[in-house]
Image (cartoon, rainbow, N blue to C red):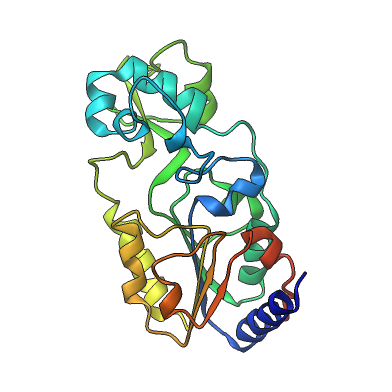
Length: 247
């Protein structure tokens, strides 16, 4: 660890110690240390070769018009294979239990924040763990999707079951959005991590932060680096694992 990194970690520790209402805003880079590939890095999902672009296969139109191909891609490439929370998820849950963290706003759909113990989680893009019948609304878990042969159908009415994830062309859930905006607006510190900040409207939520400290933790530079009080270009889990949570 370089002296510059050590100094930044000390600064981050001081910011967290002095904060009373931290909100965490995270993207795919938060879960890569759990073995879940991100989307836009060199080895990410969007740089792999498929019959159609991933953005097309994860669109509402494709789900409706090419449901079988949607599910073939979704089951094999989107639903993670039994991932476990990493150091970042666990540290955030610890900060919440200590009364320091007032909310996690995530673009991820893997449910790992809740698995780690976080309770105030705003899933902007939904979750692979939740699925519902498009006709009668019955809920199904992700195992039902994985174990279905071809397109999963409701065992009550026979209609198609849809993942509770926000596909391209679909809007964000309004209640989730309001909760996230309120958490960000009430925070004195905002930690933005593991996100390239190029996916909107999610990335636009940073405009609602009016607190004292904006911290950016990401492997690569982002458009918000110049506005941050502290920028650390490193893995999220490795950085947060160095933080001591004080009651």
